[in-house]
Image: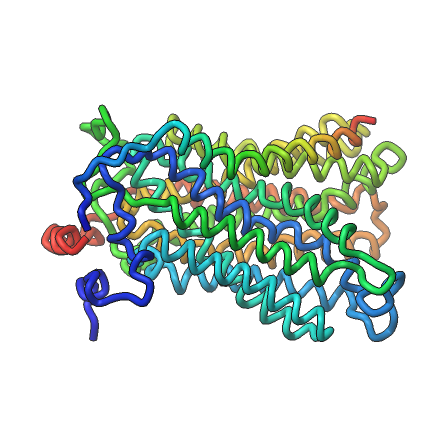
Length: 471
Length: 41
């Protein structure tokens, strides 16, 4: 049985030694500001997942080209590609979190890059042979693993480089995940337009091209990333003599962390915030048109969705940066209380026909949805220390997978139920908004219950020292 | 591995790294803003 020390022993590895953690230790003089662009290189690529829907319609016409034939794939079948990828995102982040933490960011980014490019190339094969199972395997399973590994790969490294501003640092990377779709969506549409012909919708070559572009980007990221040398601190940085109430200077082992109530309370907080946000994000276009018939057209609704993407991205950076000033717990209090007020306001705005109020509510809600993702790594770091934060964060992302199922299901089924029971379309979303507000109350209570982790969960000092020597 | 040797990051390296990630992101943001303006038309 191998011990942690053996796993960390550089001589016991590796086929590609330049990927190992000890080959990525920064030399004196390396600027920590090189790390955020390295993280962005990865997150901007995997953020493409949010834009996968641009392929849905063209992929229903792979055989018929101008219109679907009976042998073409159905939209409902294609919807599974994204769902499988989301499930594997959560699973791989949870399963490979510890490997990512111990192997270092370069190895993780490299692996994510190979898997992400492979996902597109395998999916291109699926398109070529018109076999949907190949795409489920390619984009769904392998791409999902790339998403999970890539998402957590730079998180703990960034927090080690920016102990003075961990929220801002992770916010920058996770902002990239939100921004990836802003690049991928127009790029994919443009590429499909270039490759389309009378006998081809252009998806095959778009997949191949995207796979190559993303591979190059992610390899650049994995090349420039570095980990700080043991004991490194930013110039002039003095850790606070009296740390904040919830912050710990100790580390908690990853599998010990999941045994603490704090982990599960934060899981609930993230789940509630994400479920509420996903429900709105996925249905914003239809909801805005049905709540304001004649005022918000399909074109305007598309504009609203675009604006929401920008706020989703901006919220990831700004809310996480704010959390460095006011603390993580307080930041989540803001998400929960302000979110509650905004969800309650949406039906009111609908009833008064107040489009501006409705848009403002949605934009703030979606910014806090993004902020929930980017603030949580720093929250975990405050509670469980830096050493295993990436791995703990990986397991916490199962809350995202669960919310990915719960959010759309809640909003769709309740709307459907209301419409079939005679509720006018303009009011069909009211119940859902109140349920989302109720979810945030649960999140508020869970956040309120978060206390400092009991000392018995901390790693023993001799174990810490042993790991320090090995590193 | 020798890690005591000083290897200072130059401003050019920083600019290149940020441009590599930042320019595509900026292009995406501008494109999205142009689309989002349809909300106000």
